[in-house]
Amino acid sequence: MHPICVTCGVQLAECERPPEHCPICTEERQFVAWGGQAWTTLEELGGTHKLALRDQGDGLLGIGAEPKLGIGQRALLVPAPARGGRGANLLWDCISLIDGAAVRVVEALGGLSAIAISHPHYYTSMVEWSRAFGGAPIYLHVADRQWVMRPDPAIVFWEGEALELGDGLTLLRLGGHFAGGTVLHWAGGADGQGVLLVGDILQVVPDRRWVSFMYSYPNYVPLSAASVRRMVAQFEPWPFVRVYGAWFDAVVPEDGKAAVRRSAERYLRALETDR
Image 1 (tube, rainbow, N blue to C red):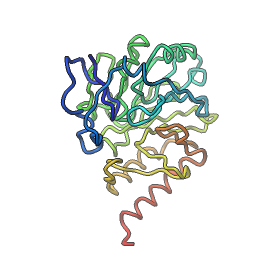
Image 2 (cartoon, one colour; image 1 turned 180 degrees about the vertical axis):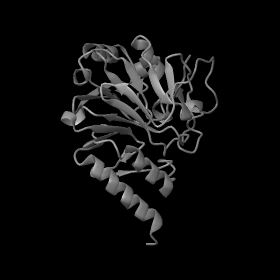
Image 3 (cartoon, rainbow, N blue to C red; image 1 turned 90 degrees about the horizontal axis):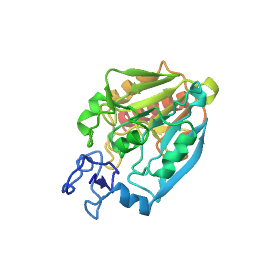
Image 4 (cartoon, rainbow, N blue to C red; image 1 turned 60 degrees about the vertical axis):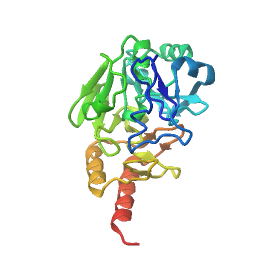
């Protein structure tokens, strides 16, 4: 069996019985649920959850699950038509659920050529997604290699601060939440003005004019001022007008780059000011 943690949604390597604790959830950036460690499988999820699909704007298709699964994030399908029409959709981030319906939807939109994931909390069933589409490569930053719970030959560990995937897609390592924390810059998004897909490396907050930064979201551990300054410097050369976060409707709809800048300034003031 390949157990899936009910709390975080990450799938483990094959084993006869699940471990006592999920290695992802016992680390300080996540948590073990109050009811204790619980496991499920992809087969069981197929009977309790269903696919949730929503247009997220800019031609991006949000792929999630209902009811809430794991952390509750949705993946984003970056469309092939905006990238040269070569049937080269890219899946940004991932969810635990994959079934025949998910495969049919993606195939009808041109298939899947690659997967890229922001950080380990969203690794989920990435190997299952890859295998469903002919072993599509999974791009993960090498700094987070230790958090891969199900190794697979499809995983491509990249190094450095940026990786061009072609067709105007570039992975940027910001760090922060995780050492290899990655965002995706899509130059062709927003009619060529650029968009930034961030998972929760930058957290789009309920007031969607702003984002925030954290080392551990559930345990309320902030990032240092130096970390935030470094993250902002990393995306400074890249133009974008919208920011897509990790959940349905978590979108900074306009003036995205300025919103991230002023969010960083507000965050730094909060860290450094004696109120």
